[in-house]
Image 1 (cartoon, helix red, strand yellow):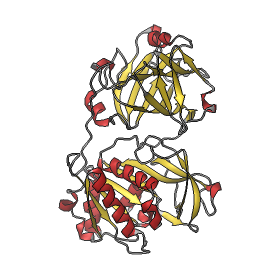
Image 2: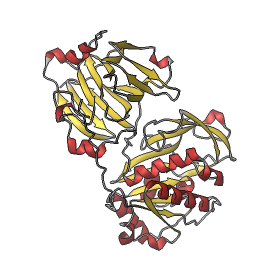
Image 3: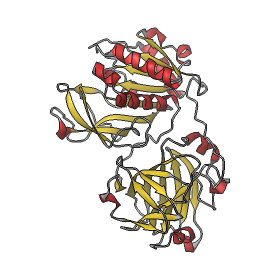
Length: 433
């Protein structure tokens, strides 16, 4: 509802560099099998740095792992490292670097590294166990908002060397992409096969991708985009919700079939694109889920602004074909970074402002995806933006009780184009206030 865009700043990792002075260290020492794609990997990351404003240094010298030297870098990329590559002093320095906010990117055989260093195993997320022959497989994109996967289709067919891991990291990390084990031979993870993930780890940011065995990978624009997004997350240039996510079911999964439980109230509409994105037009109206009302729950969804646009997510309203019923009897979590505090992104519209400092640090700008978690527990409503809690509100108005209601997304007006993806919900045990 405002006229100027408020851009959120990004948190500074260990190196504390400004966004136009980011620096990345690529480390590719091997003490076991050596991938012949390492030179192509180094060259690709250098190219990405040149095109995207970060400096890249490359080394195979473990002596680079000192506290003083690591402070120069916003992220360290372990590029198909293998075996024991750091001595105890280097390990201590790297642990301190991560705990002070440093970034980690692991590529492919980074999971075949430092088996006796528990800190590293937790940071990487899982250790390599085995792999079948190089072959095509179907990759399922599980997170459509993270910068490493937001540009990928819902499913992606590519050829690589597909690692099996010693453990399934899903309970500990946020899975970004997984393998459809029925699409190739040799998968051993019982049908749940994460292949790329991210996490906040002991103060730092971590991204791992199992892609990248072949030389050809590093010339593939889709893989380069995936890798760039992981680096941008690790260095703090892009925000994302990297908390583990389990137990959610889809309300809208990007398919036309999943819209069958939804109804449009009021003028305007949403358009479904081939990539599974809903985009608003016209209004003021609302697309709401009529298939079920909810009591205690966590609803997550991904959203993106085209520019200075306006929308919101409604919760806790009764069924109605009148969108103003949601305004009058429910609560709107605002999407519009340009309005006054109680009516801006992350606010409970008209009632409670978000914590604007936290909101600004967590917010991605127009053109990039953001993730909301809206959690309703009795009359308590909490909001997370890209994994950061930015609002905590308790309803005291009986006419707006949150204890039983529907969820919906707003199409605000003719000039507002806001996109949504992957609306999912996890119902919670009912609690008191």
